[in-house]
Amino acid sequence: MYQINQIADYVILRLSEGGDKTLNSLKLQKLLYYIQSWHLAFHKKPIIQDSFQAWVHGPVNREVFDRFKDRMLFFPIIEDDILDKEISQKISDEDKLHIDLVLESYSKFSGVELEQMTHGEEPWLKARSGFRPNERCEVKIDEILMGDYYRSRLQ
Image 1: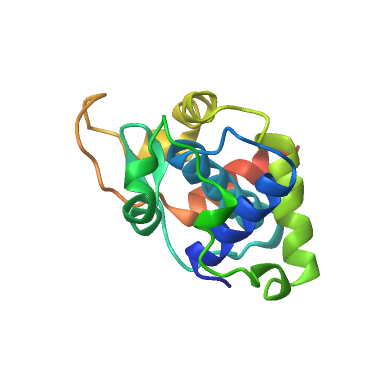
Image 2: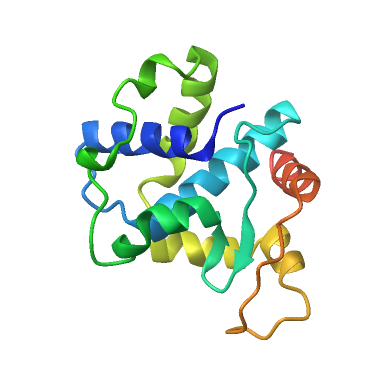
């Protein structure tokens, strides 16, 4: 397993290499969530040590939020924001393949589109159960439910 900022750095690196200029905090949060979700679905274990909470705008990891809170929708996250420039050498080839496949599927969407997607999916909806649409919520999204839900989408 990796710290969430290690995976965030790898995502920033990969998208920067691909010329993606649309990466902001909202989009990064959702990409990290999908990386974790699909790893739970395929491997039945997390790739990221940290958890996600069911915030108003979708799944959010507090540590990544704090790191990029000045980059919400309007300011892109760029290669200069990477904390560990050697991150690509610290992630296994198998895990890089997983991350790259998730990025291939989801990075074409904007942060707002990814937010809308998560708003229709059971793990986020269940964690927000009982909260009004714009009410603050810091309930942790259940990883078992994440794995089961995304695994069910494979069938």
